Length: 129
Image (cartoon, rainbow, N blue to C red; front, side, top):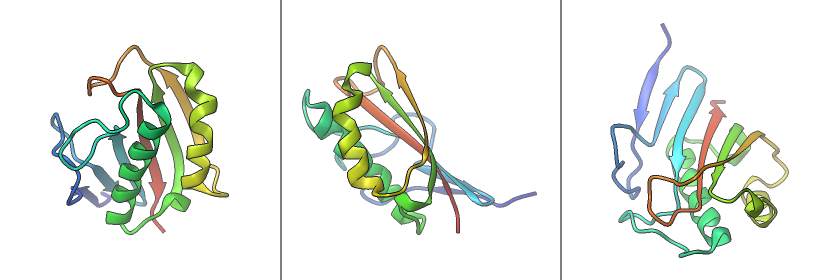
């Protein structure tokens, strides 16, 4: 049986339900969906999907860093948007964080997210090197 480790990141807000920031299972790290909130769980960016995406990816980055990883280790990302037409606006922000790394990706439009006012949520799967 493989090793399973739950990861909680100092400075991340407390989960709003029964989950943890990430789980390392064998050679994979599963990062829970990150929304655009600060360390106190307050929404960042107001109605600006670009600012919200930047905050969500900063939160993903903190989780990766806590596991000793970077965006270069991400194999798969899933992005949930409340408006699919925001895709072209958030793509430059994704490039800021991923650089030359191009993970597999899924983009899904949803009617709403768990945090009121959130326009984006991002989860990731990374490969432990």
